[in-house]
Length: 72
Image 1 (cartoon, rainbow, N blue to C red):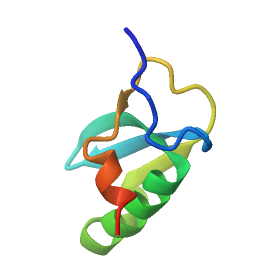
Image 2 (cartoon, helix red, strand yellow):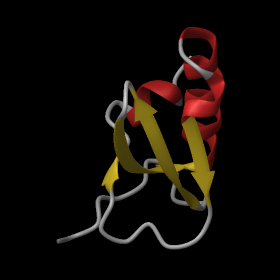
Image 3 (cartoon, rainbow, N blue to C red):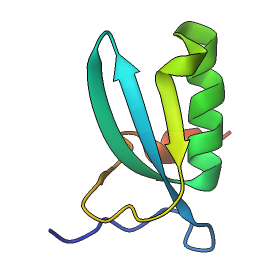
Image 4 (tube, one colour):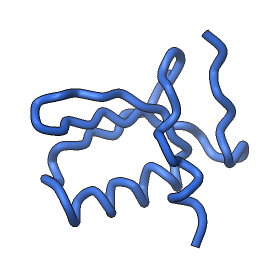
């Protein structure tokens, strides 16, 4: 599977592991989008439901709406 391109090429991607009501979802996102996503998520859901991992993001889909977390 081809890896989708990060919206911010100068930033590393991180691996987001999200647990929503017992369903685990795995995504890749650029560092800034992941940071903002975690902040937003923590205000609406359990803060400990997300794990941010460094390392390979090969085979992961991009965070849905990733660009929305990068725009004002």
